[in-house]
Amino acid sequence: MSDRGDGAGGPLVPEEIDCIDCGGRCGRITFPPEEGGWEPGDVVAYRCEDCLDRWDLVVPGGDEDPLDF
Image (tube, rainbow, N blue to C red; front, side, top):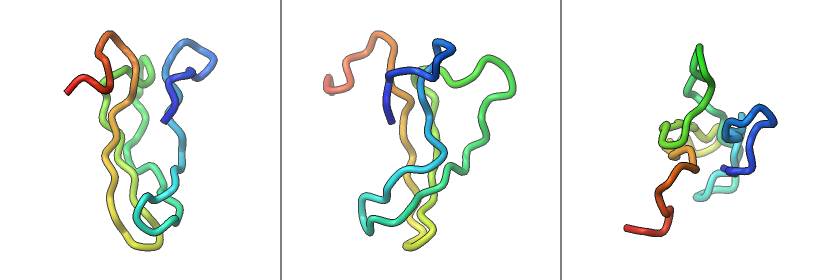
C-alpha cells in the first residue's frame, strides 16, 4: 500500500495487490468504512484468488515509524 493519499487527504488503499507467495492477484475483502474513509492504523484484508492466502495489511501513515519495532 502507498501512503501517497487518495486525493481527498486519506491514505490510498488499493482494490488489488500482488500476492507475495505466488504472484497472483489478491482482492480486498475488507469493506471500506461507511463514514470518514480509511485511517492510518486500519487493518485491510486481502485474499489471493490463486493460492487463497490471506494478507492483513495495516494502512500506513500517522506518527509511528513503520520500521520502529
